Image 1 (cartoon, helix red, strand yellow):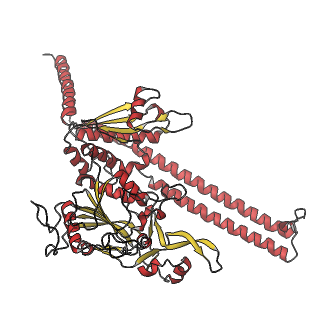
Image 2: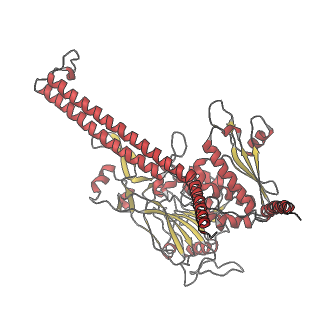
Length: 623
């Protein structure tokens, strides 16, 4: 065989091998991914992988997306690519259990009708423009559907949780069941608050009777300011948490809601009034958590209230007894609090302290500022005026206090010596537990008044002014998921901050601000000089209202001096802005060089070097 024919057949064989290897890799290695991003943006969490592996029936995910309508919106296009790639990863990882399709939604088409009927919400990017559809519809084998109406780029940190939650709900379509223990008026069947109404709308709530001795098999146990619980009831709570591991607990050293219901009765102790304080001992101490007996006041977050002055007038004044915890003081990684943006309002809240227990991890979810003090619960319930509170404030303010925590891990029983007398024994086939059988997830909050309408509902519109109810409902919703779903956390956005450029801009802005302050100081000095001239009788009267007066030489000198200084400062400011622009342009040029030109130059340089070496060896070879 000639060399030319051999080369032809060799090239053809390599081409066939290349095509065949790509086909084999596409079918056998479809689920393989190499994620080199710092935040592991394209890698699924272990919880998501577990839920995908446990799917018992196929799930179809349909992404409705308006491609043409988003041509002029690069930020939406970038996020759509992020959603699309993540959905493709879901499909690849599920080994056929998740099927992903994308539907391009154009105006006045059958696809648009399907998207609208499925619950995908159109958004109007501009007046007169085509609506944008960017949502997801999931369906299982029996055509049960779940919908994400619109993918908001601002919620990118929770994208994986929302997608995994949708798949989990298709696999487990029943609503989260909640067992409620409370001495407050929170029955969703006869709601007296917005929170109770929302619980009834979103959750399957079962209110436990006053004399309960057993707790039904529910997904989440919610304990919100309980009455005086008997040892038998505490034991029932202990065993339920050890067996099921999911509890939302809100306690209070001084409950305003209970105080207002003081004329009624405690359903857990009909002979006594509703206690204004609640606790859950000995369970809390067994978990390493302690709730203070007194109340925390926060001056930095103090909410404005109506306060009466000594002369009888009423003014708005900050009241540290009632304070807001802004989003910055919430845990930005935990899914229960990470997406909250309006903060949470607390009132007469206690403080939580937690110590680590073996196998149990404590995560603070909400904290006060560092400007705090404590007050006895009895005194706080008298609601002293803001003026009195200010007079009591110590010279050196207190410390940052924890208001809400999340416990994750293995918890031990609070009854190591066995069940108390009269306690209900475990059902047939069950035994008393001394430690949790699975990973426990418990949320504990040191306030219950934050769930009353007065603390977060706008009385004029009925809308939420803070994320109080959202926090509680989101916590219960997360707790109601599977172990895999609860283990998910928020992610950092894929769009990275340009920290170096932001630092340069911040430093330039600081220099500009400094020069502006210098100019303002000199303007004040000039005004003082003009006022002094007027006071001495050497002024023209122009600056006191006589606009027809002619300026005196002294006034002209002062004004000209200030004008000259103002021009010099403005020139300095323009120089700072030019330097900033120049620094950014040089940084951009350096990045372009490193990303575009450096690699080719290095390859070319290496090639020239090896060529030179080869020529040198050729010259030195014997002839």
